[in-house]
Image 1: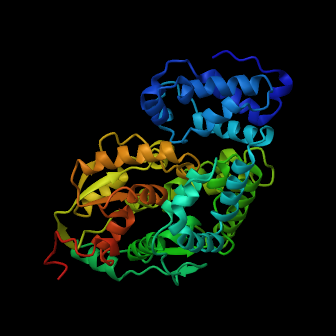
Image 2 (image 1 turned 90 degrees about the vertical axis):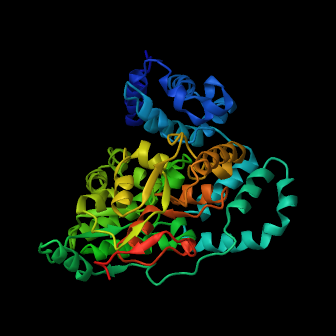
Length: 461
C-alpha cells in the first residue's frame, strides 16, 4: 500500500509505526474470509481491509475521526483472526490500537457513549468497585425490561445486567499479595513412580491476580496456584500489582492504560530484582496478549522501555508454562468429552494453539475442536457491552457450534469467553487450568459436581 505521510507526521513514533504497517498491506482480502463482523454484516468497511483504508485516510490526512470511521472501528472486536490469516504479516493489532487512541483524542462521542465508557473504565479494572457494581446489577436486574427501553443506551445497560452473575463468589483468602511455597510431595511421589529424582524447586513465578476475573471467577487462579505449587513451583502474587491495562487500552484510553500497566510493571520488576522470577503467569489470555505487548507499548518511554521489555519476555500463559514443566500423570481415567474453545487472544493474539489441548489430552480427557474455532465468541473485553447485538449473534453462533458436538463440558483460557459462552448454554464451562488441577490431585470444579465419567487409577489409590 502506498502512503503519503509527511516527514513531520513520521517524526511521531506512533505514526511512523502505523505507516510501516499500512505499507505492508497488499489489499489481498484474505482477511475478509475470517473476520467475524464481515461474516455477519457483509460490509467491506466492517472487514480489516476496509478498516485499514479508513484508518489510513484518517491518519494520513491528519483528520479528526468521523462518525463513519468511529462506527466501523468500534465494530472491530480486535479478535486478530485477520493477523493469523494475513500472508503479508500486517500487524493489525498495533494499527487499530493507534486508531482507537486517535479517535479518543479527536472525536467527541454522544453523551450516553461518553458516560458508559467512562463508567466501564472507572469500574472494571478495580475489583472492589466492580464487586459493588455487580451487587447493584443484582438489585437492578428485575428492572431490566424498563432499562432496555431507554433511548440510545438501554440495550447496552441491559447487556451489562445480563452479564452479571446471579450469585457473586465470595472473596477468597488467596486473593491478596503473598507467596505460595512449592509443595514437592506430589511431585516427588510422581517422580518416584517413574524412577526419577525431583529437584528441590522447579521455579518461582509471579501470578497476575487480575481485576474482573478475581471477582467473577477467583477459582481460576486458585486452581492455578494449586497446580503450579504441586509441580514444585513457588508462586508470588506481587504487592502493588493492579490491572494490566488491557481493558482501557482497547478503549483508546492510552493515558489510563499506560498508568495501570506501569504500576503492574513496577510490582513485577520488584519481584524480579528481589527473589527473581522464571516467568510471569497469566490465566486470562486477553490480559496475556497485552502484557506480552508491553515492550512495544513502552518502546519510546525512556523510563519504562527496558522494564516493559523484561516483563514481556517473561510473560506466559499458564498452559504455556505448565507445558514447559511437563504435566505429572493424571490420578484418574476419564471418558469426559471436552469441547476446547480457544480464545481469540490465545490463538491469534499469542499464537498458542496446541499446548492447552495437548495438556488436556495428557490429563486424560477426550478433547474436541469446536467448528469455526477461529471465529470470535463476541466477548472481546467490553465489546459484548458496547456492541451487544453483534456480540449476541456471535455468541449464539459459537454456542450452536459447541452444542452440535454434544460435549460433557467446555474448557477455555479466558474469563471473558467463559462468561460470554456460559450465558448462552447449559453445558458447564471451566478454565483449562481447573481440569489440569483436578486431574493431578486438586478438587473437582464445583460446576462439574454430578458429572461422572472418571475412575481413580490403581496407582493413585
